[in-house]
Length: 508
Image (cartoon, rainbow, N blue to C red; front, top):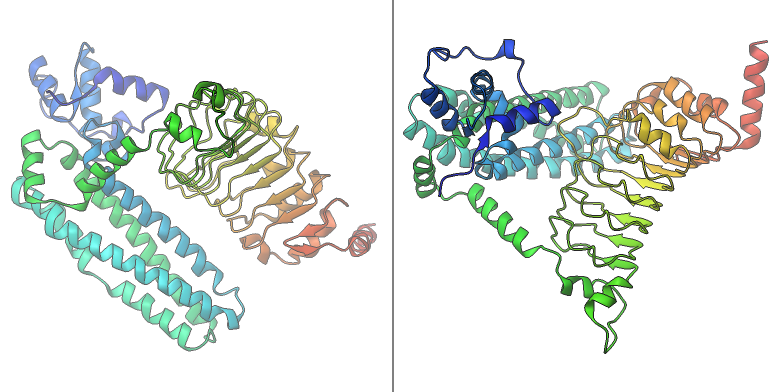
């Protein structure tokens, strides 16, 4: 059977819709003799890169060939390639490395602001996480050097120089040794070290973080196109020589997906209710209002349309990548999807009665897709681990406009949020947790607390803005009388009134 391929027209359509990231035509590598190549030669070259020419026009064939010959095209769009399964496990491990490093960056940023008696424990936790990370990183590097890189060097002509720098970087442990030494020193001193030593530790870790990100990016740029475009014969030879975790990861993933389909029996057992003796499964499922399908290794939401009266659905602790197949659930009031693998908020248009949505612990980078959720009162989005965007985005004005009419509770803790001023339009908001983020602008805080007249609780702990001069005092001054708790501490109404009066007197 011929391998599946993506057509030129598929690529052009995806590009026009913005579903793929492409290099500007002016930045594409020059293609030798492409204009003089015959149609057959051009089609064979495209096929070598996993793209079928089909009935597309020649100008589009030449454009797409230039795109796919660029190394960065497949780094950004490897999932489009028909051989994506070859690299999926390897890419996922890289993404896990990036997420772990981001967590450690946040931990190390807290050390200087932590009391000295607590620094040792924080350093100990960071050291344990860092050492475990280094072990996994070393194992990954050993696999690449001994098997993955070696295969390309030995079997694919002209690859030696591409991998020489990567192998040299694997062998360099100077920066990690310095970080381990400084962490051990901090622990031994019970956290009592100079500010200069803490800054040095942060700087060393920053260099390690930037260097590691650059190394992973260079690996992907160097190898992805080569790996994806091995011929079937070359890939079989690769599997024969190198039985690695990468392929077993892919095979195991496919097997898990096959076992993780939602069945009728699973639905019947996902509730505290019982089937009556003479009742059919179909009738039983129609009367269910609550379903608990958590921790089932599910990869997809499917086969739930039997439960037309569903009101509460628990799908947390699974491996779900997309919110889908819920158009039937018009009566749903609660949807629990925390700790999955979701990358966006979508396909909620028919959930017009939704009141509580829990999406924490995913890979979501933008608040969006909530235009039709006019009754939503609680939205929980804490602990998002995403890699394709620098900061969590709050730029979907349509969703924010909808939420303004109903939302009372919003949790954005540990989402790498930088700007919170857009939330000042959520007039019904009563509780906001934006702790452990990257908020820096004190003006955003003033806009928020001044504009939200129903806000009772606000948590901004562990943000850069906390270090602003008189941060707490000024935040209380600019707040409305509704604010009762700021950063987990009560706000004294008399004290606020006194401070506001004092400020008014000063500016008379």
